[in-house]
Image (cartoon, rainbow, N blue to C red; front, top):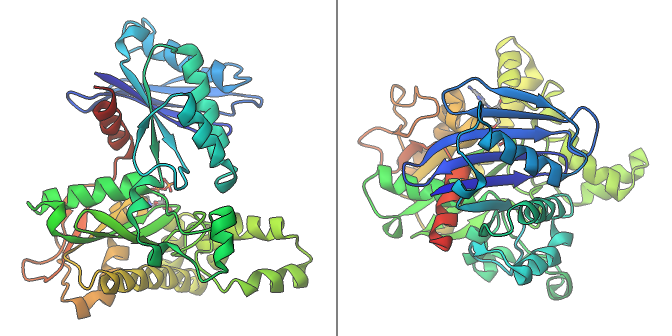
Length: 397
Ligand code: ADP
């Protein structure tokens, strides 16, 4: 079966067409600047050059139509017709408490996703637009929603409730939800596989360290805690997000700088994290280069980032009363060799021992701890699109 995986944002749409039999990516691409000027579709058929199609995309339905045209094009296409696309898997950011797993999309599901909009006002409406556009163009193709929050729905109340008046949970469902769930699920399962064990027998900590980052505790296959919260702002220091801070800072800075709460929220999401701390960049490669050049603030920023990850690992080892494996994934986790080594320095008390030679790896599945290490450390590339395709197949078969 060929599965089209769609990740729709407010002005962009990413896609991959995956053959679920071989799990090969047949083509992938990105529509940018949907609804604004200079829209462009970049389409890459596997093993061939990418094609750039610059054409107006006034809305997402036009973008989806262009994606289908690109996939079925006589020149750069990879299938003959729409009939060769068996199902569509949509990434949906927030499923609230309504969705603890992926689901086949129907009108009732769409309504339930819409009811989660106020929990993710920037993301869910865009995801819904993508789903509706695909339904319009492919009315007979089954569609599945795969939620970023679903994997974390197994967290117990003690982990997801905040120390706030309970009525905010009752009235507005204010609680920890967690994100990157598809990645935490995929990577924890893959880590167990690499270790030749079943996930149900292991305590695993997954460190998803990308531009956005989160750490999760997966106890015998179930997520029991995760660092992101009601929104993706909580947790470790990220590329541009602050991560956890004293909440009173918001009011303090609002008064000092004359900011509205919405403006403060934007500072916390877009101007903070390693970007704000280092004054260099949100990209870890730039910060590393600056630190190597002697930039003191860049060095402190990296130290603070590694320290924040190490503290969550410690917290989750405590939450699970032990840990068998710690997996690093996403851009920084998969590629930043020095960063993994720095984080590992904090983990000696757990009996972990990183192997410098094994750790010399980027973007490959590998155990990076010594044979004597009491906790296995692993580099595990995430693959959210493949995970979405697998879940889609499982539901539409
Ligand atoms: P997201 O999906 O959240 O946008 P990614 O998982 O793609 O983010 O991660 C992006 C981050 O990964 C960037 O900060 C980038 O600097 C970092 N990264 C990518 N390659 C490397 C590398 N070789 N060394 C260090 N950091 C890297």
